[in-house]
Length: 404
Image (cartoon, rainbow, N blue to C red; front, side, top):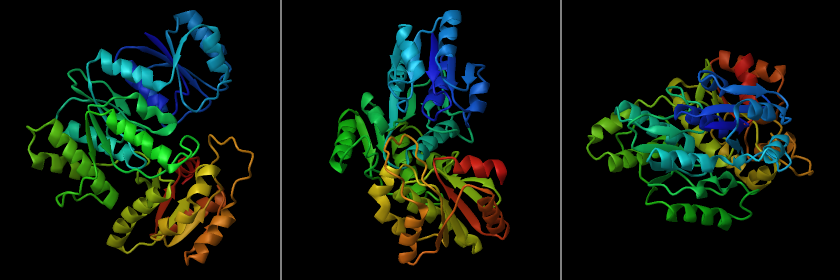
């Protein structure tokens, strides 16, 4: 089958394109810019165009190869040129869930789905790592690049399919897992779920659609990973593997978990004393800073947190939680808000407003911009032995990663 992926460099679409190629489909796609998916995708020799998505490339690929299925991300708007062109061409059109379910069905796999506000990517990555270490074949689809595997894979002989099930756009409600793992639930995505009750109801529905559910598992004292949230995530993974693979000795599972190397953008070391993390919600920030403090205390380091908020709407919802979230930071540098998926004409809250709030709570904070002055501050602090932690799902990571 010939499948076209619009937004192929995205964290949701890119891994699915990789998985599709691994199961034997021919993949095509487009995006406005490259990303960390470039490397894993290039290895599969797809036909991709980077640049304005006018619909012309899609039309040409359909004329030359015959596109069977057009897959698009939840982020594209109804008037997106490629989506309009796909309709004009009469192509089968869907978001990613339909194709994932098709692959699960065709390959007769049991779905292990990881869902939750926080901890999805790390928990999914831990599962993939442990299956690898235990020499048990498993197919998977993760929401980020991995340091030890591609972001998605299909393996012959797989019984299980490990999937990071995102609640954004209610994606996870399209699945009926054999086993669901839920690391944490905290109200988020007000653009999709108007109230906390709506958010909780979605997770209740997800759990009702799952044959088995694991949630709120106490950490095992034998798990020695840095970070309380990592140990809690690992406890879920331990319980899952013990349930799925009862023949595996418990000590083998613990040993695999304690050697987990981490995943990209989850406290990833990108330079000496410089770490990058996807955390942007206050609960994620606090958990990541707690991990950073455990590490910093080993060498008596101070911590500077460089934060790039995500979405103006979300900032209004969680604004009062930030002093609590940044308690472990010795200094906070606050960048302008990343306005992805933002449609509101309301002006974003300026960094100075957040800085005043942190200072009023007794924290050391100052506004910053994505520029050479920020790079100089990071270099001076990290070269002096301090631990720099980048917290962002926006351009901050790439800017520092490419210039530090």
